[in-house]
Length: 202
Image (cartoon, rainbow, N blue to C red):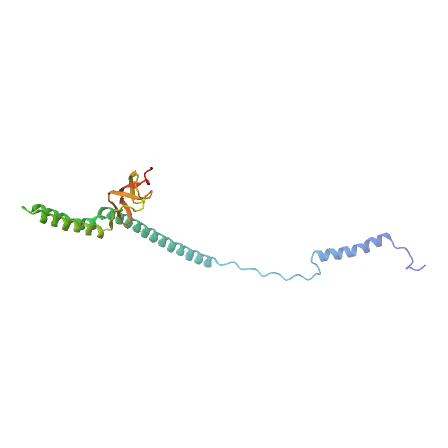
């Protein structure tokens, strides 16, 4: 009988079956296989380079800190100057108005110092003094609120003292009892008025 037809020895089968396993183990362990390309090693920065960068960063932080201190000092100076300006405005805010009133006082004192004045001379002097006062008011934005009869009642600048029956439509000024004044468009004193309540009932 030829060897080709002879049955294989079980021992020989085990030995033959181990060959591929060994080959596989060799490949798994990298034996006989081509090694992949190794990645390049990244070189770490030197200590000198890191120290230089740290020194640069510290210098920049120091510069920013000095700028912050200067800005803080400037803000403090602005706040202090603003407080001083407010204090001066409160103290000397009426200086311009006072300067305008001084000549009025001078005129009144001069009028009182004259003896044996005629009524006409006295009236003329008072009228001249009044013009000075009106000019002082105008220079300091002090304006009269003097509603005429028939004007519409304005609660912003008028104060109604009474409501009376009248031929005028309801809500119109019948009579001004006292002038009002505004200063720089702000009400200093409202005008006192009597307001129409409409026609009296028959």
